[in-house]
Length: 167
Image 1 (cartoon, rainbow, N blue to C red):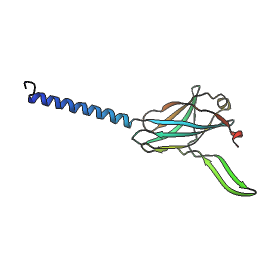
Image 2: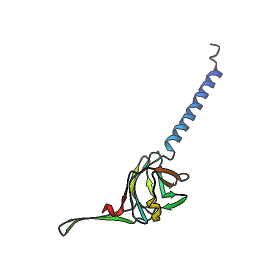
Image 3: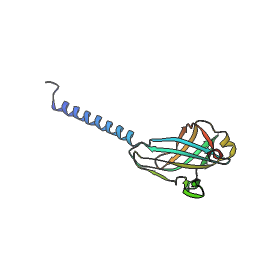
Image 4: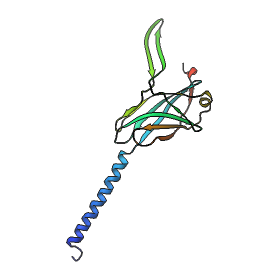
């Protein structure tokens, strides 16, 4: 009974309240920090062009806008096209009748990702031929967003398809 005084009860409640506040701050930081998951699904290359089909997921509880993507190779930075460009076109024919004509375009930047959301699409890079011929796994991608500094990710890719072999 000697330790169960009003001052000790007040001290215990203040320590519990402070610990709860610190835990809430830590949980809030972990859930709202920039947390992107990026995966290269397909890589197509030609002489001076490389097209990546990329899946991007926002794993944080705050929305994020991706402002640009770049590939780094031997301390050189190659940004992707910011304005949508036609990457390729597929036409389905039956005899001489065109059944379907579908065009594929690159994603327009910036890309807005809501909390816990994602997107995928094509990104076009103008790169020199010697860079596209000497690609290594993993590919270093620099992602610029509206939240903090640029994130550098090393992304593996399984295979490289030649533009000419695809069609």
